[in-house]
Length: 305
Image (cartoon, rainbow, N blue to C red; front, side, top):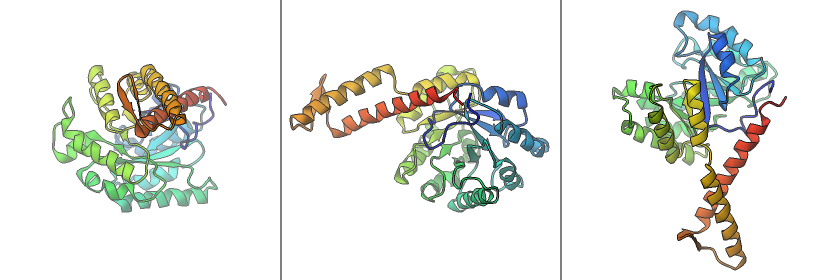
């Protein structure tokens, strides 16, 4: 078992499991499961009266051996809890800060600056703590291009459908058509700014496993690399959907082999099983195999010290 999680720079980002920061047993269990990362929550999962008391529990959990990377979702910048949350949790064992309800570039700059100052004061490696903003309001989606382009330590964005639908006054339906524009805006802004693909929202209906899987498939097709989970039973579906399937891997290997043979013959486009193959298709196959290798490597790293 690892003392702390793998580096966020080389890690896999498919499944992020929430655990309430004030519930030590649930946190301990969450950190031992198969999620790529666990989010110890100080925001929505913790009552206002319990927020200060939850901070030392989270800090203690960060210092224990675990299988997954550990993030802490602090309270939003507009609250009176945000600064104290960040100041309390930054230290050994913390892989990243999840910051909710980011609506402007200035907010993200301020959080990035604060984390950097605390790193310096405490002798921690500068920039090592990841920063994961959640875009979950109409204003945040409207400003997402500028937020993505801030040039902070944030490497990827995430989307929060629950607060977004609340803010917009719209119903969150099973087919999620009402979320398509916001999700596409976040994915496009991420790509334009050179960030990694974003992470998608949780799925609230725990009894609708089929709907959850469909949501995973839907957002993967939109360019997302993973999804947040609110129950351990959701981890397996996320990890499966957001990894290349055996069929995709076999297809990628065949495409690359055939295309390299064609290149040696001076060709830059071929047909394979009736499908036209050129450089973009070949590069897509290479990305598929690279994702498989990264996931395999991350799996081998679990359980090491």
